[in-house]
Image 1 (spheres, one colour):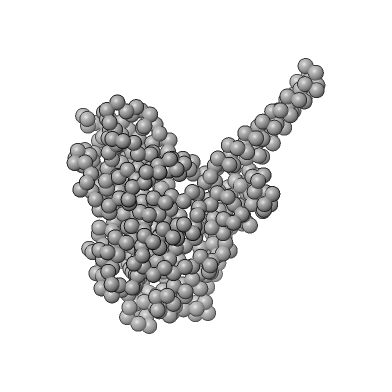
Image 2: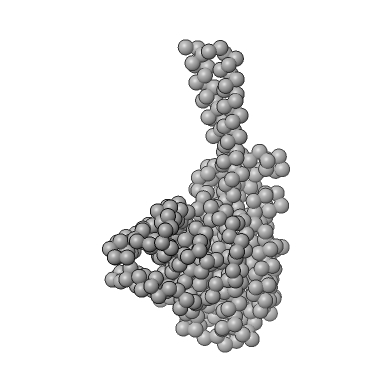
Length: 298
Length: 197
């Protein structure tokens, strides 16, 4: 075989395989993890409208059955892909998601927090947001609910612990480890955590757990935080996903008791058996990731 | 000998470059060079296919009723009860009727006419547990349906907790998808296989 023929065949193979690899592993893989500005992001794509509609329907049904006449708020936490939606094509339609939720759950007052967040407010190696960066978010939601939430200066930040989140092993590119920090105040220090799957009482930050699970003991069906020195005797019920594990402790002090329900692990049919709904404030706060898989909730 | 060496070298180069090609998205690089796509490790193909299937199911009905287990086929509920009978370490569970618009969330395949399904899930427990029983109409290529479920089943669907083991089993005109702890998955699958359906 002559050398020009060999080189020609090699070039054709090169072009074909590069094209094949590009088409197969990039364009057609719409849920890939990728790295942007040192942060590992999972593309949440596309918008599953029927799942979001179900989430809104479930929330509205809970309102109709249990919360009629109470002060009810809805807030949506953008996942990390939201912050690259302007420059990456395979991200969901976040405006549409928020619209479906607001229209489908019209009994709640919507508290928009999208504009308060940036990619830097989330861990590099994990999907979750950093507690030390969301005090302003807690304050904004608190303002909407008519309560005063502590400012950053009222907290003491713990010594940073190294943290490698759930996304850490999803990419080959080396990404720096995160630092995990939790915030304490006179209120968090005087609060205790109880729950259906927790024996006895625990502190709000369970340091025997690893990573993000230090916040409210990780995945739990139903929890109760009780603050002994709260400013007022007022209760809050939070319907949430894991993102709320780090923001809920920022509401203690403003509320004497906070009940936290994760509808992925707690059937809404059981609500009356565990919670006596009276005049509590109620906050539905979930990430776009959960709402886009809304049928996980029951 | 020299020609063979050149050919081997060229092919090595081709495969090396093709492998590198999996990492970078040329389109996106031109827009923002700091975006780097990962290779396919850890991608959620199951969810991806689920999403793709979702595009085809435009006939979305109104959201399914909450707490509508009464609408589920009694036959399916009876069979589910038999499947779960005697399990010692099963969490507190409930049955949920899987309506047509919920099929992909529970069975990871699009709904087809005549399909009937019921899901058994934990009622109050932060663990991964889902047993979904599907009845398909007579004449359905049940092997193919089961294969599709098996390929697409996402044991990470709960996002924060994960099923230890997943099985897809056929018995008569029924398919059972189990995603749970290894112990429960094995026991449920065995109970189902032992039924005369």
